[in-house]
Image (cartoon, rainbow, N blue to C red; front, side):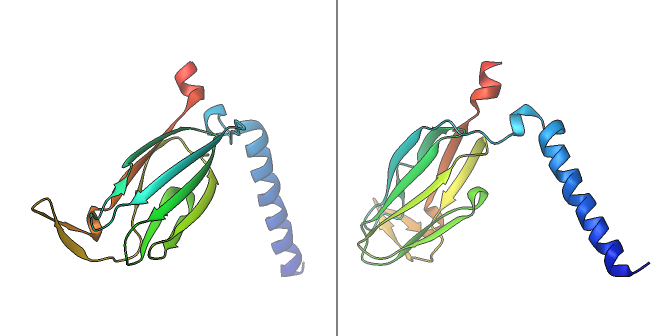
Length: 145
């Protein structure tokens, strides 16, 4: 038998198995949820403070999140949320928007993805590595059961 026919048959079987798993065996808590709710959230990179404001954001699983990111500094920053595949540069003194659906429940860090230096804030040294926040995504399905 031709090796290409065998390879195609194996790929088709894998795709069918994945579709059947997703349709019949995937636990209810792991299925994608879309609530239809849009959350407009503004995050600021505070001028010469090496921090985001707010540092904690709470949303519900399934919400569409529209992040407006404001960079108040005279140099670039970035925003990254690895769990959602977000990594966006924030040019100096600018505003950007990022949209995604919060499909996963849990606590996810967001952080500056562009090296942006360091400085003294209120007598303490702050650096690029201090620009960390938390996205808390509540799972309404497990909280109601």
